[in-house]
Amino acid sequence: MGADNWTKCPKCADKAAKEIDGIVAAAAACYGKVSAEEYNRRNTEALALKNSVFQDDTLREDYEIGIHQGEFYVSYGASCQVCGFTFSFKGEKKVCT
Image (tube, rainbow, N blue to C red; front, side, top):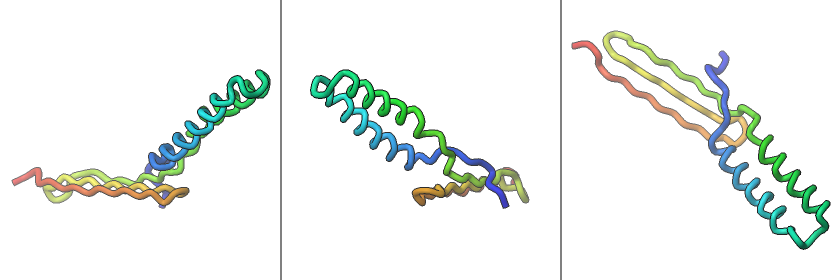
């Protein structure tokens, strides 16, 4: 059975953002300490990494929603194929008396 949707994992995105912030900060910190060419190379690489890291959809989402026997229900589950992050939610509410 296939997934209902694939999207970006919030845990992977958060981890990547922190790592990239460190790389960008390290590139900025070398300003005035290395040649202009080396600074520009490091800064360009850091910014390119920042722009490309959020491309992969690794979060599998499966969900179901509907009304059955007078009850509205929703079921949602998500799991990341890379970091193991998982989330689930289920809810029901009677719609008919």
